[in-house]
Image 1 (cartoon, rainbow, N blue to C red):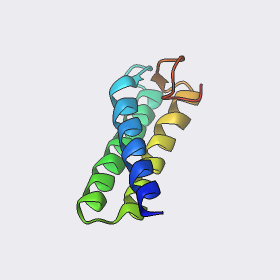
Image 2 (spheres, rainbow, N blue to C red):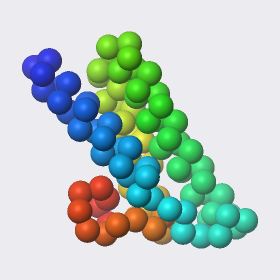
Image 3 (cartoon, one colour):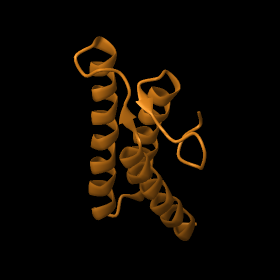
Image 4 (cartoon, rainbow, N blue to C red):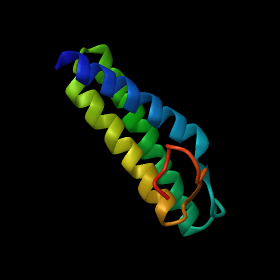
Amino acid sequence: MAADIEEKTDRYERLLAEAVDAATVAPPADTPMGEAAAECLEMAESYLADGRHFREDDDLVNALASFSYGHAWLDAGARVGLFDVPTDGHLFTV
């Protein structure tokens, strides 16, 4: 089982890192929607950093949870139009 969580944690970290790089804020920055997008992106980046911290401490359960939560922020933002994201591939569910 340890190998399973290690592989999954690695995969989710890569997925979140790629998604953060691929997402661009869609609405103008000086609008309420632009501010919401910036907050969602900040949350995703924070969860990526938190997950990496947990991973360094060999806390794979919390690392995996952090990577998952971070991706959820981006995915939800993409669904409501806060981000321009690739619509093909594996990064987003839009």
